[in-house]
Image (cartoon, rainbow, N blue to C red):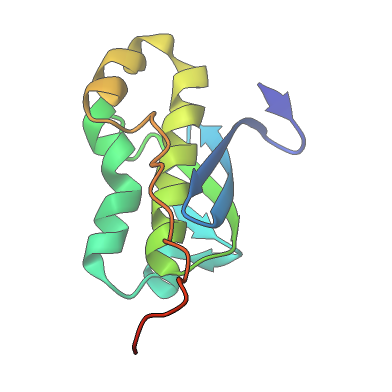
Length: 124
């Protein structure tokens, strides 16, 4: 556990071309801040908000941690997936017993799907 002003746990998440650096603060209230903005302001779609909260729902830790995430690259869906991956990795450092639930939900595995390259000789 790192200590700056408040002690926190760090996790890095990746999805498509997005990279998220997630700081998880124990004994929090459940606030999620992304690039200095509230999650409700950052993500417009409710499905993306559910995607980000999925690791907490899986482990039953809703409202126990605060999240500060810095995410770069890609679009909003890739960024939401990267944050989800980073939160799952950070939760694992808090308590190793979460591994079975997170692994069963597929939250610890980095999604290998990337954009397919452009090919010459095709129309449109």
